[in-house]
Length: 302
Length: 302
Image (cartoon, helix red, strand yellow):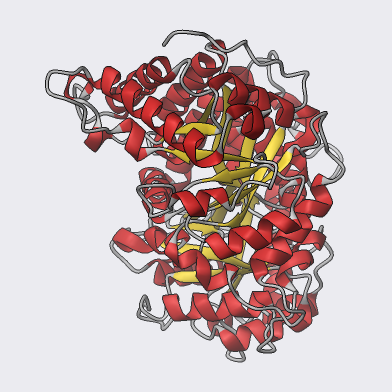
């Protein structure tokens, strides 16, 4: 809660903005905002069962988290589903949280996992720009049509390649006739599309979601996508280890951003500690842990 | 605009509700609501450039479409992206359009193409239930985690299997080592998950999106998913022919619902005709065209 990162500029390349955010934080990390009513700290419990009360509560909690981790991490990943479930009130809360996050200087990833045929993806991309998200997560199942619109007007995207959930194997780990896995074929597609969108540091505005739970896969995928920034969920709560995380970075120690959601949002804390102080401490611990895994920030963050 | 379909019951199985909606319409068709500002009829142009004005305009147009096609088709597919792009006001419009559609007795498919890890998919499923959508479209890339939550509490889903857009081939048509394509592997997964969720007519609450533009694929996929209802986009505007559509149905003439969006929403009409009368006529023509392709409604919808 000390230094404020410089406000990000939408005119700069999104990958360069993300690198800058990680460098200022001193660690390649982001905090995921996945607020759920059942786990809100007591002072923020909603007043009644209405969508409006729920949306106010998660907006208040989300903004408290933003302030608690400001100066600790430079990037925030906002999970759309947690807000959407509360309808128009949830969408208003989402908009409010985005505005606060951008105002505080965070680089913001909209975790929406959208994709559709081209004309509809363009509407989704317009929604992301209206929120002023630097990045949107998207699904590769519809091919380039579901990805490229998110790269328009100086914005970035992270396409799902290898997800951290167990059932992701059902499709992603299938072997193709040419020897690749489905995830590797998607990686090649992402690499090909992304090559047209490189920033000053050599990273593309099209990154890849690669879970921290699949070390061997991460090693292969890292080789196939040298210019893609990896967004790495699954560390800690979902079982990813330091070795798993390390495999997501290039040999020069760059190229990935590690996310933590639940372990930071809902920490145990210490007796008598306020919830936001506990979140601040958990974010610092996460930041330092990943910095230790990856190496000095000069190497890892550009 | 004559007979009103019986209001659907959320306690019934979603596949049975969809069959009932098609039977009442006399044709296995649905109309897709993909409203865009640039194509609204002149009387509904927004008053200014605000999100609120845009959201009012698309809500008004959407409700006009619902009334124009009531009694012509029994099911409506609502494209989330077209509303989302207008933020909280768009979400309020979406909610309003859903309430009107359900009030008018339509079976409603929420075309959102969502999916995430299990805990987040549950939030998306809650959002769909809050809208009272009978079906939600979802992506298979995360495996069962991104699909099964949409089947909870008596709701249904259509998982993307073979999409109608050209770049869908980049992933969906890849050949696996075991001889299947990626789309066929997804079909097997859908068939396996869906087998646990059959309704009285023998169809699953988990259906499949299979574009009308890939006839040979549709023939194979139909065999692999005998109990899945196919949601078939791409007819007409995207190049799908009568033969392509026919391949999506089982030999007994059942098992698919064909969608039309732009050709119904934005018809040429006749001189002096109101926009909603033109939409009504276009919906009737589409209904009759598909009924002729598939055969008598007793076979195709019952």
